[in-house]
Every structure is written in structure tokens, then in C-alpha cells.
Image (cartoon, rainbow, N blue to C red):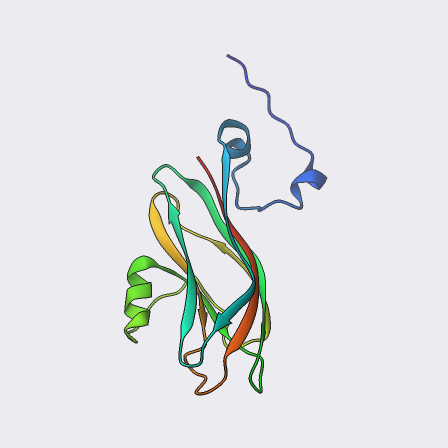
Length: 146
């Protein structure tokens, strides 16, 4: 069997550069969304989206944007982390993150995650706010090939 592969660089420019071009041909793309136009996060609290990536997944990427409002400073912290690190973070222990926005009003995330099976969390943190509830507009997605 002879396989000839070619692509137009200008078409590829809008795609995730970490995706193996062969994956686009021989594997199917899967997408899980994280969308909420009105995600409310109470003071001293957080909210999260859970993503389960199956065995055999490749070119795993979590991308999107968010905008926070509420309180005096209109800010949240956004993290992307593994399930083990999420448990540690919830218990206020040290945790590694794939993405850490710091306190911001608006942000964009584009995180390449490890291939193969795993559970990951996109976390919106407002635990630092003593009184102010925050509202976050979230538009994100996890994509992978399998």
C-alpha cells in the first residue's frame, strides 16, 4: 500500500501545531467542551471541569478562553492539573499545574497534555476572595486523536 500525504502550510496555520499531521489522517478527532456563559463561583470557593482522556489518545490539547467579573477586581485564578494534583490542591497542599493564570480578569489557555489515559481538571479558583462571588464566561475544549 502506498500512502501519499501532502498538506497546505497556510491551512495548517490555524490548527494546533502540536498535532502530528499523520494523526489527522489515520485517527479520529474527539472533542469535549467546557462552556458556560454564567459560571458562578462563590467567595472562598472554586469550580472545575473534569476531562477523562482514554488510553490510546494522542495530541491531547486543552484550549480556550475565559473572562471573570465580580468583586472589586474582576479576577479569578485558572489552573489545569492532573487528578492527583487536583486532590492535593483541594487540600491546600503543593500541586503541579500544566497552566496557572495567576489572578487575572481575562485569559487564554492552550495546554498540550500528556498522551494516553489520564484525568485532568480545568479549575476556576475564587478561594482568595473573602466576600465576592465571581461570574466567569468559559469557552474551552479538550481535543485529542484516537
